[in-house]
Length: 320
Length: 159
Image 1 (tube, rainbow over the protein chains, first blue to last red):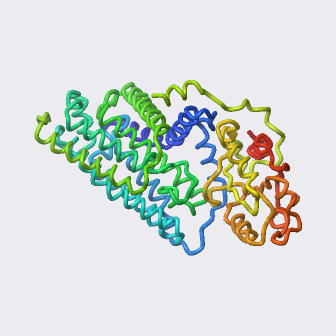
Image 2 (image 1 turned 60 degrees about the horizontal axis):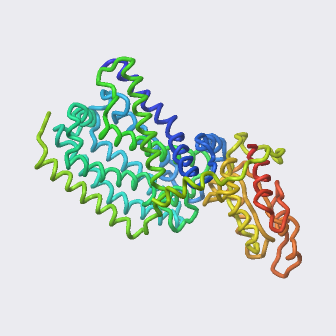
Image 3 (image 1 turned 180 degrees about the vertical axis):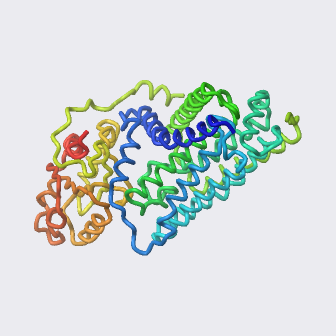
């Protein structure tokens, strides 16, 4: 474990912290431009966060410690994921502590914390948002796990760094049916998990159609800032993870040099920016799905993930 | 593919921005260019609502000055009140204002909210918005144009 590997992991966390609001702002800006608007600019989420942090903290009457702690749990679990997953370099100090299953568990921990906070407020919309979120989460988590199974077959390990290293050493694995199916399945569940169109509309004002927003209606001031920051970080980390699972080029090795860390930082920035831009541009062309159709979409992605596992098990040749 | 062609043909339809107006109030938290608004219809004829919608639509695009409509008063910095205050909407208006975290700004939109307009002394009317809650910024007009609304919002966001 070299000092530079530790520094790269710390850089990952700081980069996700600082970059997540910019990713959200950039996606809003792409959308605004395609709609013919001027848009608030890439820095708008940062301005909003700075302002929210200076506002009064309101604790709605009747809420308990569940409501008070949920933002910290979401932000903390997301930061932990940012420290674990290989974004800039492979050899994170926490790499051996958690594999992809651990990451999925941490994601779910954040989701459950927010869901309980939504119920804790006792409002109609909070409970409704929570029930919808948990419905979607229950369909998303198995798909992520199955897609991860499919990806871990060629590398012979569920460790994230091992999967990324195996893909980087054998790029031909990427065009195998198992890998392609897993990519489509993962893309759909990441869109669902981060509350983007067509599953949830992040800019909606209609309480009846909300999912993620409905759970956080009662948050104000610094806690709201933390929740919004965390949801931006989840999006950024998941985009970075999917980028490195399927396009691992440029990532620094487990014992990196200073230059390799720099290249890794530039590479992951470019990858996340391109993916976020594509996602935002794609959202312009689609409308939100009816809530009762969402399980069909997610069941479809589950089927793809199942096919991916089958294909990579029967067709893949282990290359450890 | 016709949509992509349309996006390319239309380009940016937003009106050019005039110079920033003088500040009516200091930005609520000291951060310029960020203002979340919660809109409350206290008893309006919906004329002002149409103009507010239009102010946030692509042609006038209030979002480029940092203003945004939000779904919850807890997320808001400013209350956008339209219409005369009716008996039924007096308490909801007070509740909404109480739910907005400090520091906050109250903006009265339209002649009815500012002075009562044609509905003054109606049997269901409590009074103007200023009679019920303290008002910081007034936007006159029946209804005010999107340009007027945006000028007033910019005098609060400071951008």
